[in-house]
Figure 1: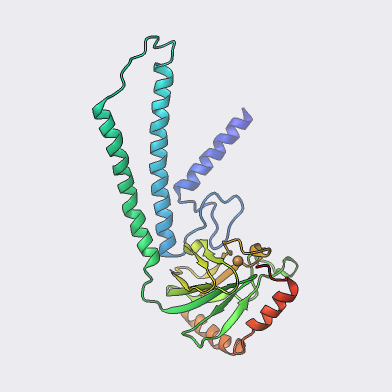
Figure 2 (figure 1 turned 90 degrees about the vertical axis):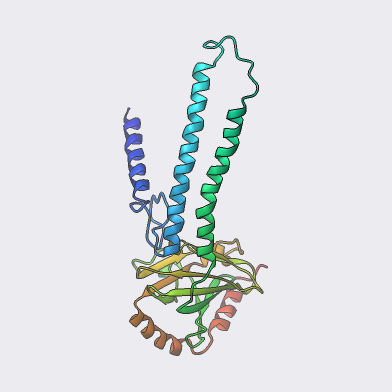
Length: 284
Ligand SMILES: [Cu+2]
């Protein structure tokens, strides 16, 4: 009985968490223990992805409940004992028309918001700034082509060097920094093999392909640090090339830009490349 009461509490908790769009158990910008849902949204695109997801969840739940209901009716009313002489009916035109048309209507109802969301994700609004992210084995470099064109590498902080508050496998030495409430156009490419640039709280994920420039965008609505990970198997250190984006006020961003222009004036990515080569022979 104890198990059942615990299960009931768990189910109630899960229901409450789902009802509040998962806010209770989902981290903002990073995963949280016992997370049940998406990470909390910090961009208009992710908000739309989450609401489309919950809309679909209701559609799926209704269809599943309907099918389960039909099965229960058949099992109870039409088993061999309850219904010893079965009907020999093979066709019913009205029902056949209904079970063709209703699924078409359901698919159309799903398709409209689905395509609308796809266009929102793909059509980049006029950007306030552009950042180019290049996936390498196994770290990211970021450059700011319309703000001095400096470039810097972003490497994961090893577990032994983590400071309090820095999440394991996610914190990096040099974060990508962007201003809050600005449209950031992200150019994404790969330098060696295919990587993938993904930040759950912004609802972005796009492949970083050598020889090709992909692009995506986000508008961060909250200040803070938002983490993501390479999301395309790219070699032995695939799990150790996190993405960290620090969202700051416009003032702080301009201050950071001034410092960064000096700090990264000399291209240090070549040095990092050399370090990466020594540390881990590239596997193509
Ligand atoms: Cu990768």
